[in-house]
Amino acid sequence: MIKKFIKNDINEELEDVLEKKNIDENVKNLLQDILYKIEVSYKDYQKVKTKEKSEKQYLGEIISNIQKKCNQIKIIEFSQRVNIEKIQKSLEKKKYYVDDRKIITYPIEEKLLYAIEKKINNNKIVNAKYEKLVIPLSDMINTGKCIDRIEVLRDFNGWSWTTINSEIENIKANLFYQTLQILLGEDFMENWTKDKDGIIDYYKMLKKEISDKYINEVNNIIKLEQLILQIAIISESEENEDYKMQTMQNLRDLDKRMKKCVNVQDYVQEFTEDKKKAALEIKEIEKILTQEARVKAEYKKRNEENTLDEKIISIKAFKQQMMERKKQLLEQIEKDNYYLNPNNYLEAKKQMENEKKLFELIYYTDDEKEKILIEFEKIFLKCFKKKIQQSKAEDIIDLIYKFRYYMLLPFNSEKKIKDIEELQKEILDIEKLLTKLAKKEKIISNEVPFEAVKHVFKTRIIDLENLYYKISVEYDKKYIQIFDENVKEEKFEIDFSDKNKINKKVKIFI
Image 1 (tube, rainbow, N blue to C red):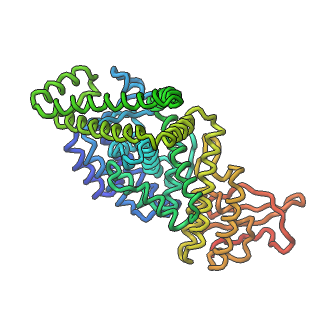
Image 2 (image 1 turned 135 degrees about the vertical axis):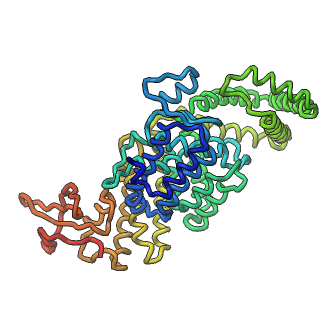
Image 3 (image 1 turned 90 degrees about the vertical axis):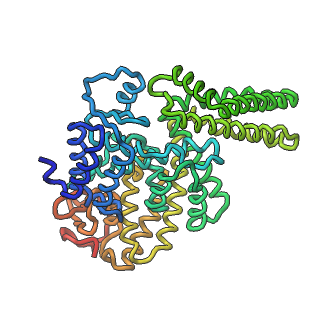
């Protein structure tokens, strides 16, 4: 029956794509449910986030993603178990599994859509020159993008907007992505996620964009860079157990290397041995790649040693892996040569100390991690204030919507941004600035008290332009209430002068 409610052109487009895929009726039905629910909710979602993208474009992108990358999708029941341990663990933890060939998921619409979005990700979207930042920042932005894409399905149902913190796959990644999206725009963030191997240096573009538009102080840009790196490493270590274990091992290796640095002879020997090992491995790779018979033999040998899910899909893919490894080793030799230069000895020691300090983030407490997030959000609020000051009159209403959305973003498992005590000063400054500009441009009525506008930035009533407020008196206390034609929100006690009208319904937006 749901098929009948989906717009015919979208439904037919989906049907045409699915006919060519290894997909059964259960998957088809779940995908049609997804399209139907998005169609019902998209208008509210678009209003809340001030999205320029139309519903048709959004649905078309989902179908295009399925067509490009999703050849095999399987839905399994909660009671089913999968014999492959890696898949079973992923299903238990995430409710879905994705690899190069397939998607396996429980019958949950949000998880299927998330898996489809994850399937089209390019694993590395940060330029290789950023080294330690490549994997954690790529993963955090890709995760943020996936969470962003399923929001319309997760938080909207056609009549209300509700965000449950625990339903968000990675709160830090979501907050980071949404914060940058508000500053830089959805096109910038979306294009970044479509980049491959960081060919376009979006990280450099991000810093330049923020520097040119919002922050002129060099120290603040350096601080922003450091915070981005810290948040990415924290997020990756929390989400990826393998990464955390590898980082712990790297810290142990780093400790050994730093101890050797105390003795110059040991220091030189460390990097010399490292360089020799890399050179020998490069020589072996070149031997294999120059003889087709050896390529085939090595490809066969490695595939026999790998598990089913780790098998290399083709000889071409194997050659690419070998070339990538050779590239990494050449970069390692270049780095070793740098450290072996006597002039770089002190610099090398300093770099190792900084690296150790950075990766020790994985041992931080929750409170220490949250302080880093708070510092990042303070910089964002400073930038957003500048964005408001630079805006045109016609942009004010969109900025009010964006700030309301930002205020209701989850900060951790329990709190939203609006609840974070350390951000209240910056938040109040922006609330006052937006109120002043909105009244000046006759977007909000002059008679609306600031206390009423403050609650506009915290309401989940979707259409702000339809909001009213009313002041009432109960037991010699004054209360203010925000509402529209359908929803009345909680009353808040206020302290107003006698000139405020009592029990009068007043429209907030003109």
